[in-house]
Image 1 (tube, rainbow, N blue to C red):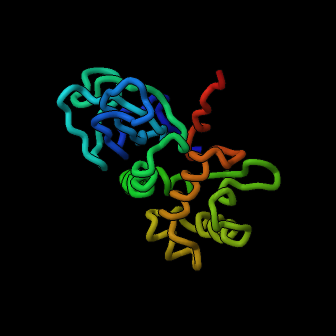
Image 2: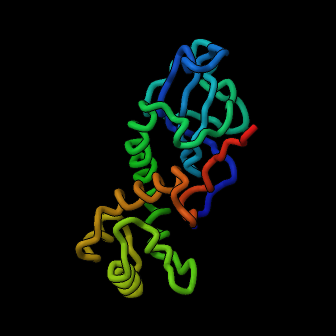
Image 3: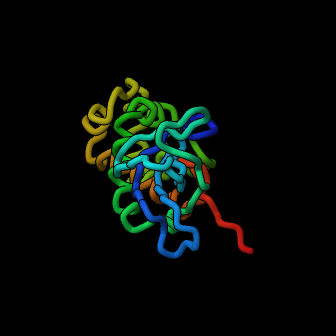
Length: 190
């Protein structure tokens, strides 16, 4: 499991809706974003006059925010707009590139989840053979970068893609184990 702070400090804008959602009774500007630390999907209200662009990194932590008025709340993957869903993979790749050292540390240090299942096997496209190859290579020398990992473990799919697919799987709530994100937001039934 990746070590993360409990609250999001920054997020990447996935979609900006200057007039809000068409289904909402209250018409206020909204934006949907993904947190950089925990991959939390959030809906925020920008400050009056603030322009948010897709792909922009914004401060959402405690203190004086320059563009965000308040956080409306967490949203599930399925509550994202189609534009936000389309932008999500690109935002995830940006976050993964900026935190490459943390993800390489994951490959270097991860362990078993159960007696029969290893954390590496939770990554889409990684089975027993790839897991054993990764474990053998990291015993010889810890991985230094995604390129080093791809070079030393033959036929391993692109590490970026493995991590992006795992994060998407967890955000959709399709997983029993959460190694990259917090369990997704589940709206309460009324």
